[in-house]
Every structure is written in structure tokens, then in C-alpha cells.
Amino acid sequence: MTLVAGIDIGGTKTAAGLVDPHGTLLARHTLPTPAADGPAAVVAAAVRAVRELGGSVAAVGVGSAGVVDPVSGRIVSATDALPGWAGTELRRELEDALGVPVAVDNDVHAHALGEAWLGAAAGRRHVLLVAVGTGIGASSLIDGRVHHGARSVAGHAGHVPVPAAAGVVCTCGGTGHAEAVASGPALLAAYARSEGPVASLAEVSARAAAGEEAARRVLAWGAKALGEALGGIVNMTDPELVLVGGGVSGCGAEWWEPLREAFAAELLPPLRDVPLLPGALGGDAAVLGAARLALETLETLEALR
Image (cartoon, rainbow, N blue to C red):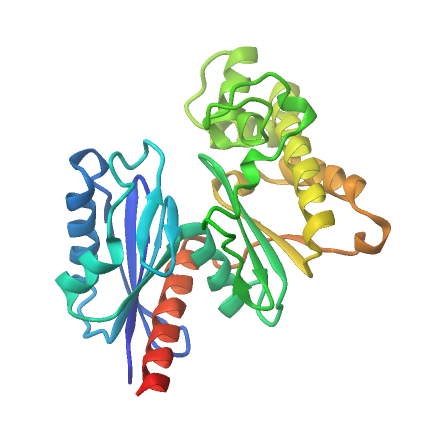
């Protein structure tokens, strides 16, 4: 049976999975991303992760942090989470190291492909997936295919303006963007300003679930801003379904309820039945979506023979 590998390269960890054509995840290997050691070390870690899977693969798919040119497999731009990552010829370097065809796309796009293949969006052709964590990224599937845009930059949902962020500096250098108030770090910072430092967003979520008003207020504040942004995006793109994943999506009802309320309030009347749901695949979504890219690459190569 043909086997492929899917790789998810993030700023803190690199995960790889051995996957069959049915989407069965046969083996996993995860290791820290050596981001501080530079791009060559990050590529070497990805190669090592594939080799540790213990199977012979016919192709490799990659979902990587950063803006990716899916045709060349080159990293167009990236944040400081992966210093020097911009400009990396990721597809070529992995093909040289592994000796098999490689397909590369952005990690959130891979996440969406995984959910569309085997998860909560299975059978849907028009899907918006939003990943809310350290940043806020998105992927729009149109007729089952990722919409990359003219410069491969499509999907930056975190940089949609929202009223709650007016005047607040965003990680991109601009002001007023949803990511500045609705990302994980933004929520943690808002809580710290109000109540003092706390170890993690999970602790804020636990305090909200226990009824602490300050924690509930902070989660609702960020969720409302995100819901407004997502409602506006849906009015523009008309998906069948919106999926939300990423670490912040684990914050429970105290986050989901105001998110859904704000989202629904923004929708045009014909769109008020668009579901807003959590993803189903968790941390495996991007690995499985990357594996799907690898399988599609093999199908394309076979058709050209």
C-alpha cells in the first residue's frame, strides 16, 4: 500500500505522521522545532521527523508556518517565531534530503484540508476554517480547493479591523486588528492587566468556568471581537460551514457562547443558518491535510505519466 508522510512545522514543534490513502494515521513523531538555530536546523528536524516514522513513503506533504508559495514550495514571509524562515526553498530542500516528491502549503491551509478530508467539514465544498492561537489565521476552501490569493497571502483573518481593537497595536505593526485583542497572548495580557499575571490561558479559562467574573469578561471581550470579524468574512465569502480550531478554541462555553452570539449578529439574513463549529481532528488536522497534499501530488504525477 502506498504510504505518505504529512508534516506540520510550527514555531515550537514539528509533527509528522505516516498516513495511508484512506487517511489512517499509522505512526506519529513529534519533536521541538529548533527555530532559534535557523532554517537549516528546522528543515533537518522535519527530515528527522519523517525518518523516525519508520515507514517507506512515496511522497511528503508539509503544512508550514508562514506565507507559502504552493507552486514553488518557497516560504514567502514568516514571523519572528521562525527567524530567517522567509526565503527558505522548503520543497526543494526536503526533496533533496528525502528523495521523494514534496508538496508544501501554509499550516492553516493544511489544517483546513485535513478537516475537509476526514473531519468536521467532510463532504463540504465551501468551508472557512479559522485557527485561533498565538495568532489568528484562516483558510477558505472554495469548491474544495484552497484559495491562496494573488500573492499566497489569503487567510489573514486576524488582521480584519474590529471596533474593540481601535488604536491597539497589532503584531503586524498596524492597529485595530482582531488579532490584537482576540489571540491567545492578547487575552492573557488583558487578564494580567486586570487581575495580575497568570501562568496560562488555560488557567484563565478554568477561572472563567468556575465563575470568576474577570476571567469571563476577558474571554467574552476577545470572543466578541473575533465573532464580529468572522461574521464579516462570512458575509463576503458565503461558506457552507465555519470551523474554529487552535488553542483558544478550548476555552469552553465562556468563550464559545459570546463568539457565536457576536458572529450571528453580523450575518446577512440569507446566511443566518451558517454553522460555527469546532474542528474534529485536533492536533492531527494539519498533519492529515499535509498528507492529503502528498497523495494529490502522487495522483498528479501518475496522470502525467
